[in-house]
Length: 371
Ligand code: G3I
Image (cartoon, rainbow, N blue to C red; front, side, top):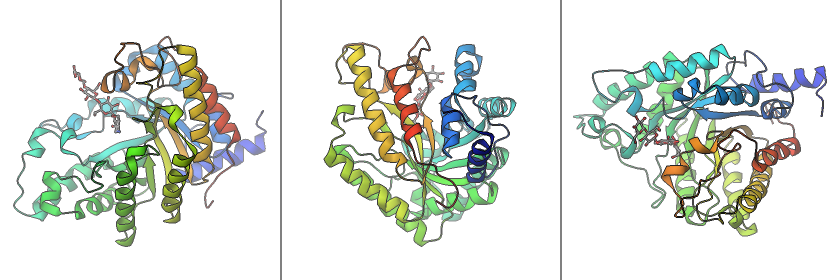
């Protein structure tokens, strides 16, 4: 559908209003996913790494399709503060410059990945003498990082994956050993202080999948606590990796369960961002045409369900091109066949999943502030 000037102004205003820092340009050109999404009040984009800035073909795709990027790893503690003595902002600055130079919006991921596996060893080894000592270190980090990229970053994953997916309980780190569960609220308050214009999200990978019930319950419990304690949280980041159950296992019963979860989340007054969308095909047939079809069909069903909630205002793919996907190495296929989790294949050609995303966006009801 061709967008009239009036519709464009309305939808650009809707996206602008939902972002604390308005988009400097309506980035992605007509016909792109970014432009289609913009018409519906949805921000579409992708994760990107600093290394990809020198891949011209990748940059071309990002510029063509996306209104927003998020750093795949460059805002993580293990990059910015791998050593206690040195702060390394160079990769994150490169992505921030890329976003600014191309007038693309930016999300931030993440101020605290509250999981010892993804914190530097020196942080895991800390033995704080008091909660105040831990607050000083954490507060300094959040203040510096969120402050440095304000107001560019319109929404932050303040805390990532603090709920253990097997137990539904809070993970333990050197920070929580000193501060208890208050460490989570503390991060949200510090983020609001350092980046007052940014929307603040809790981000996690709970999903519709069968092993995810405890994870979902743990996340709901955390969100309830944050709301009860008046933590400044605006949104839940639903990562939207389908990690373990294959796409053709998105059954009606699982959809009902998932809706129950989503109903609880939006019932708390939270927005929802789909922050890391991709589709895992580890156990699917190697036949490319069949695989692509199943992945596309799941994508349409999943996004239709998610976009039926007007609170869902952002969709970010976790990378655009198969060869760069984390899934190639993290959950590899046993037959060695290349996985196809993203919208473009490894020669940068569109796949059926791209059309499925476009169709879901086209079918999505218009959303905007206050909906
Ligand atoms: O950059 C180094 C390189 O110098 C080194 O030679 C190589 C050898 O292993 O490692 C490279 O770093 C890797 C980095 O990705 C960049 O490719 C790390 O080992 C690897 O652990 C890291 O993985 C990232 C992972 O998070 C852990 O941080 C993935 O790229 C990234 O896609 C993934 O993203 C996460 C989200 O942050 C949170 N949600 C789940 C999602 C997928 O796991």
